[in-house]
Image (cartoon, rainbow over all chains, first blue to last red):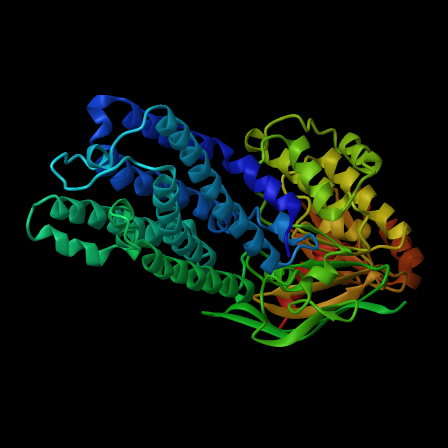
Length: 255
Length: 301
């Protein structure tokens, strides 16, 4: 079911981008959390946008490289001419894709936890609105929950890209559709955020993006909305990964 | 020898007359079997079916009694494959690639791999992306042969190889036969099929035209001789008077090719003795000639 050599091969061909994105995300996180100038943008810019945009770029490129690009170039022949099943190929690549996202968020979360315990800030500051009637400091629990919520949405984005990558034999269709999907979701998320910051009319865009299921507000206000909202991206991820795996198992491969 | 590869009434229709139609091929264990055809005739499509990459529209193919499409992973334990389209996984150097490939195949003893690398004179430390076409082809050959598989499926294995390396490859294939392996290879280069194959199937536009065995080169066939005449008068006279079947001729260069039955060689030489010749040359019958003949005369095409 799981192929270790294939996993190693995926690590070898994707570690550069993973390292770069993880580094950028971690550094940004630390910077927003530490510097007083940027502290009040921590949840607007960093947790509002960066935790979806950066992983989205990573999954767009990586999901395509894991399946479609290898089929398109023909190098998948070297994997499938060994006793590795097609279902093991998809399973292994899914483990890599999801696992690398978990690691990415894990490193960023650990860094934020360390920074936060050294230099705690209030929730009101973090939200960039000191007039809010909300008391208390940003807790470690909240940080973990926010990242978990973001991670599940990113896994859903990754799963949809992976589905396109498994369905199409040609990179141009895989990247094209994944790119459109990611683009629409990220853009709608940004527009809806301007909406929530007071630009009227733009808040309707939240219905166009699965990033809306990532709800850091409810965590900071100690509500439980974010837990129920995680069900939807999780379901999207499971459906998309299943479709991708089934199609890849059944389709004709030009190898 | 028991049958090991069986293709039965296999059809894959890509539309517009492309694809393969009603293929029947049977290969016995230990045979070297060739598949020859022009570009686009269906060689690669056939190979991909045997690898389980494609599902036939109708019919089936089996290796060792196992359906290629249903359980390719079982078959792959015994098969080495050289794909027609060569591109490697993005893993850096050739050494890295072979190391990962060995892990897939469960090879721990790399001595045979080293031997193959020496044979083909490959610098495996070079990055895969910067390798030349021939170098990539040699890497692909090493990857296919390194596990000493029972069955080898080689899709145009000599593409991009220089003549010396092609000979090395032919030697290697013959070596595999000696240890009992079955080889199924496709090519449009007749020479390498002639040197290796026990049987050859000709295909054209996705249809099987004919299958011939080694016996096509048998003693009983008329031998071909090419004769160049010194002067035109004699050339024309011989052409008119001889009872032999003239396969081809060229008036400008005053030479012709005659098919001489096995028992008529002596009389042929005696007949020629009266003529003023530039040369007489025996022309070995080759698959290439057979193929040209088939295409010229074949009603199927």
